[in-house]
Image (tube, rainbow, N blue to C red):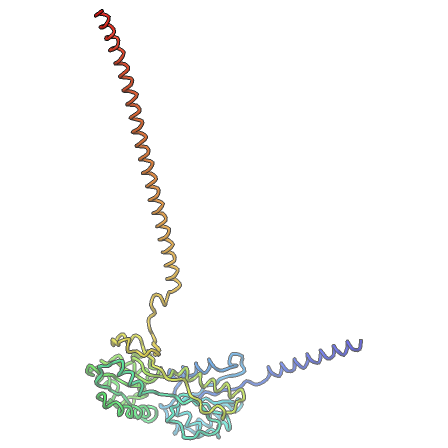
Length: 421
């Protein structure tokens, strides 16, 4: 009896410990991830990066991890002018819920974090995403890691010349305003020097939007337009780069190419790109490992997925691009599926019904042919029987007539013979 009571007490104690453990786990505070993006919320790049990050983060669906977003709205506003205000705002806002990991999306926000990290969130690891390798400092501080973003302007130009072998001129549309626009311009100038021995190069830089569109409408045949859009035109009007590209693609008398996947669907043919959604997934994988306790030093030096050609099928058709020139590993977007691709099961069902109907019709035709042959055989037999019947009747009639004639003739013959006697 005493042993039974001790066993029950031990079981109850274990149950209580398990309950306490579950309660403690449930009461454990969520891990906080702070996303900071250079641009404003509505731009496609931060939207796609955020989607990729959230798709990858472990514990987001259970509440063990929660994500906060902040946008610096660069380059519309200079960070140098309100750095102190941002630092004070972020420090006060997240004082009660400090981040466990910070995701820095873009070169401007990374520079901001490197300069103010100790004042904001000392010792908190930072994962950068969407930052060119050339925009990274030679040596990142401890706790700052990420995957450099490959922007393949050169490979995009090579792709354009491959798809348009008759191209004789490349027109670059750029802007030299401070910030990302100037970085894009410098990168295109470097690539222009590399292809000058193959094609003529022209730059349309710092032009008002309307003037630019008019010039693009007059470009001669054999031209390719390359641009990433811009955040402001030559008249200092603010633009969404994707919207600027859409206007350029509509007005230009030549195919357009870009280096970012967010430009797909705006009217450009495409380019060699790493989608921002993949960039967000790679950052999310690093965040997962940091939250799991992996030291940042063990995660440094990782490389991202390779850039690939991404093309708009509608623009390939519009500019009569030879499909044989498209790279085999290219990702083709907006391609209209064939009837077989879109409705394979329905087509197979329809073909099955048609084949079944065809088999049924063939069987019915065969049955009809067999019936007709049988009817013809019966008709022939009836005809033969009727003919035989007619012959029999004719024979009987002939015998009767002969009999009727034979009797009088016999009598006459007998009488004649008697008279002679």
